[in-house]
Image 1: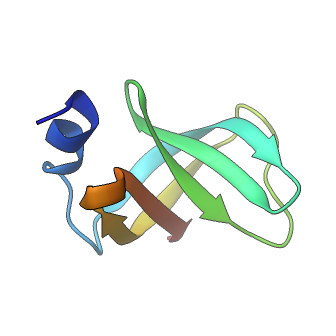
Image 2: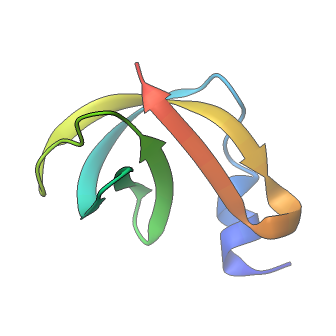
Length: 72
């Protein structure tokens, strides 16, 4: 099991987490919810880099080692 898979196993869809925006893209932002663990937050108006915000785990794709977030 990879480090990402181990980290993802500690979360469930629907969990609300406190995160920090670490990368901003035209379609959203990557939010760090644990040290080294980033999820994609798709949004119309991405928050600024370094913004702290509550997010909810929308979907976990353990096979692809990815998870998506929405604003909580």
